[in-house]
Each structure stands twice: as structure tokens, then as C-alpha cells.
Length: 293
Image (cartoon, rainbow, N blue to C red):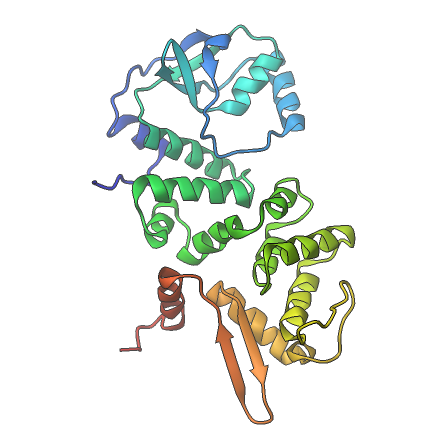
């Protein structure tokens, strides 16, 4: 199957590869338009929709939405916030550009439009990235190039989908940040441990750095030893601020869990990877200048 070109501008997506049904703006009864079931944005910003509805009441819809024909009606490709706000404002018709667009291009346009607005949270981005990877058969590196992100950024975002469902919901609801989620991913334990620690983080409003320290404490604790959430232990690899800083720098550069284990003389550095592609990415990051054979 030939891979589709991603990361193009909206104008190119609308004019190249798919036939343009109409380049003119037409008014379509608002009840004939359905939302895109693969819309990358999950949670609707009700306050933002209300503000936009008030603007539409005063000035009308200034930018048409993009639709495609589906059955006896139309499906939104881009512009769901405008469509929802127009409904709330009481409009009976919606200005639209109707395009002949396939499923893959529809998803790409929806994702790119939201990326340009920069209002998707990282879990919504992860869902969109996953769809694009699966639909277009790309590697993470290829996807990164087409959307203007580094491979490590794409990998870091996709890793959030490995969190337990309950923890992902905490991030979607804004109770945890994506940074908290990535720190929790470094916890060597089962889903129950991750959920328990996430609940404590929310309850005690701990920072990302607090969570990173706690994860290190869990990793260094003897089996069966309790680690108190929200308090600092004095023993273990996390007690040396120079080692802590070194771990954090390496984790930031490599987008991977890194543990430094000091000994009386020297020590070891442990880097965790998730699959062969992630290992290849880490090796490339370490050997950025191509010195390794």
C-alpha cells in the first residue's frame, strides 16, 4: 500500500489528491451536518463554545467549516467548534466548503487544523498520532518529520497511551499534567500501583519533580518496604543532587527512563527502552554525530 504524504498545508490537502467538489461557500441546513467521529479533540471546552456562540450571534460565522458528503447528509472535516457554537447561537444554516475527501485525509486535516490552533491536550495528540501511524503505516520518525515534531517528541506523546485508563482520564480532566503521566510511566510496577500513586499525587497536589523523586524511591526500595507519598527519604540513589540532576538531563535528552546507580568506585547507568524502534531512537540520540560504527 502506497503511503500518503502527510504534514501538508490545508490548502494542499484540499486541492491535491482528492477531488474538490466545490470551491464555493454554500449554506447547508445545520441539522444535516454531523460531527466527525474521529475528531482528535475529545473534551469540549464549554466556556470557549459559549464565547464563540456570543461572537456568532453578533457577527455571524466568519470562517466556513469544511464538510464532506456522507449518506443523506454531511460530515464535518474541520470546524466542529464553530458548528457547535452556531447551533448554540440558534443558526439554522451553516456556511460550508464541501470537499470530496477520504477518511485518511479527513483525519489529517482535522489533526492539522487543531495542531495549528495549539489547543489539543497531549492525550488528544497521542490519539491523533496513533490514528495517523496506523492509517498511513508510518514509523514514528516519518510521522515526526511530516508534522514538524522530533521523533522523541512523538514517542514521548504516544507513551501516554500506555497509562492505565483511570490515569489517562485524570490527565484529560486536567487533574494531572502530561508531565505527571510521563513520570508515572517510569514506575516499575503494575497498573494498580500506578493508579494508587496517581490518586495520591492528585490528592496531595504534588509537582512533577515530586513524582519523579517518588518513582526513584520506589525503584530503590527493598521489596515490601513502604514508600511514603509526599515525604523525602534520605537514602538511595536519589539522595545525591548531582546524580538527580544528571538523571533528569539524560531523561530529557533521551526521552527515556534513566537510572544512575553509584558504587564506591564508579557506577552504572541504566536506560530503559520499550521496543526495537525505541532502542534505535535512543542509540541515534546518543550517537547524534554518527561516530559509532
